[in-house]
Image 1 (cartoon, helix red, strand yellow):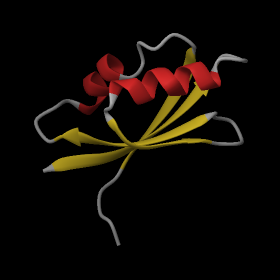
Image 2 (cartoon, rainbow, N blue to C red; image 1 turned 135 degrees about the vertical axis):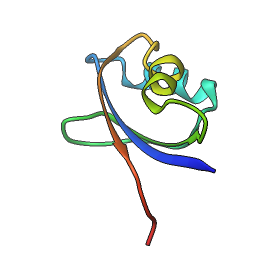
Image 3 (tube, rainbow, N blue to C red; image 1 turned 90 degrees about the vertical axis):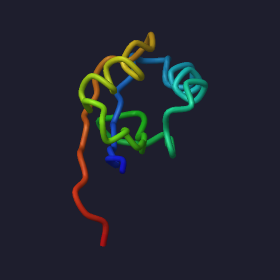
Image 4 (tube, rainbow, N blue to C red; image 1 turned 180 degrees about the vertical axis):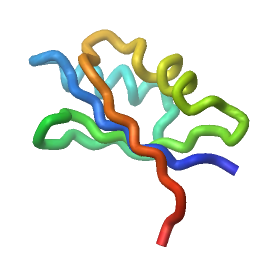
Length: 79
């Protein structure tokens, strides 16, 4: 069983497309979108059940150059 997680990512100005390409190459996401508003990207991913969500995100995503901030939303039930 996996945990569905949404991660919003704010990039340094001018780096959004480079960040998106670097994240896409990691192939850990289900979906990745550019967005308007406070954050530049929205990623949907599934974290393995045995993994620590925070550690997984820090090690798999947040090492990409150009990421300024992230906001992670955990999910509980799909309707």
